[in-house]
Amino acid sequence: MTKHALNLSEIAWSRQHGDISIIGTWFGDELRPCLVLVPSYRKRSGFRPAVVLIDDAWRWSPELGTPGYVMDQAPKIVANLGFDVTPQQCARVANLIADHIGDLLTIPPKPAAREIVADAFMTDQDGNQRHFEIADHA
Image (tube, rainbow, N blue to C red):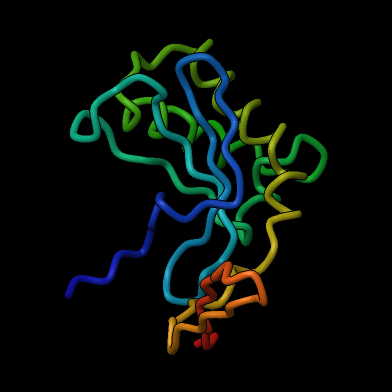
């Protein structure tokens, strides 16, 4: 079974900004919080998602960041998303990332995987039955 570093079916939050969506999720074996930029309206095969790890978020900060890093990475992200690389698109991507650094910092640790280990049924005095699943956190 292939293990993926990025699973966009398990996310903390998602925000759409026109044709670019930003997703807060977890990345890699260590499940580090990250931002993922994807085009809002493209097929899956037409782009590569851009991942900004929490460890690199400071680089995108207008106050503390590294302008040279942003100037190098923004065009790559725009191109990987399948958009035309223009100064406006690069600035837009840089601003979107900077605007969501606070959201990135609030992503909680990924919830532990749950494994269903048993079923329980409860019947009340009127004969109504309720079903419960008993889970074990991995």
